[in-house]
Image 1: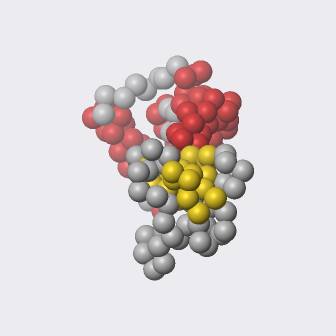
Image 2: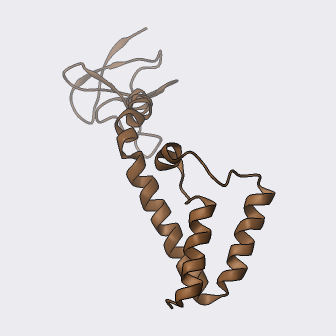
Length: 148
């Protein structure tokens, strides 16, 4: 069902991949400068050289390939997130009572049935928050030192 058509806007020949030919719509849905034809998978653009560029397919491939390259950076992002949690705990301890924060943390971990001692290697890669024992020790040291 491919039809050779001519775009009045660009003066180039394009292939339309739908039964309806490639039309230049002024003030409507899309103007055909490089023959952007809506297809079920996404937008298929056909250039003057006849190569097709499917942006939806490229996006799908990008989402599958990105985790492969981002995995080595996971510990860095987790460390950065844990560092921000320590900073937030320090700010909260300065603005309120550190003992109350420790009690709240213990209550949260108890109610959520979260493990208090996660595997260090797993926590290195995946934990966005420091383990409860580290947070409580940090808050206790802030309480003793009055670092505010």
